[in-house]
Image (cartoon, rainbow, N blue to C red):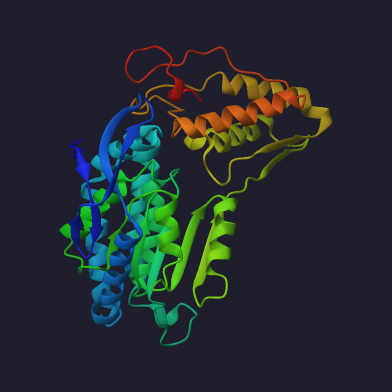
Length: 361
């Protein structure tokens, strides 16, 4: 990976130096990866204005078949740079390279291919014979699937004729910034995609901007509520995909080994940072001991270590702040009477071979 020492904001097809800068780190060893600009309110305003101009003058007027050509081009470049993107995702996020290489990045390319195919067929999608785009989409995504969340947000918006201002999570901005390079490489018209990096203040400036027609947010319920309050009384359309976990339920007639495999895959995939990770396990009393024993056996086989090791099952928690939150919740569980259990396994550091604070699951 050739990571630049510093990244700016991507506005109107060009890189812009930001007034405020912060660092993004590798959570496996806490080494600084790059310095990244954090957009201020005025810089967000510039990005929204660029998106509006591109929407009104170019993108919304472009035939769907022509928009599709750009999306196909982006998808092919993602495939060509797949290894680079996978490594960068694991470095910046902490997820195992096996997941970013075999799951995330292939799905990113697939989404752009898929929506490229829809761009000239929107009249058959159930919205009437001549559906119209909404306008400028302000999109905010989380850190658990940085590049894949970007694809989920940007690809359909562009296919439908909208322009985008996207804010990635402050702890995982790098693949979004490389995606901006891909947009340049694909000769996407300036202003169609804008990337503004930053923390909560940047996100608030984006979703509350009067020039944004649609807000799309994936993240915590708490922030989702704040966004709903911020756009209340406006004409903005809003899509919220908020945090929430499902229960795993095992009855006595279940194939226990298969059930346990599904439970472990759901809980520990991406270090458990997925919307489908079961936060509760409900087991019929007659098979409780059997399920618990099988679960412990399976957990003892999980390999914790360097995210760039293809044999690693569980990489690094995304940030020290997230790790502290996990520890706090675990302590609360213990105080409320839960019995803590951990397999007797070593925890390898990405660098030294010794346990490191932020690489423990």
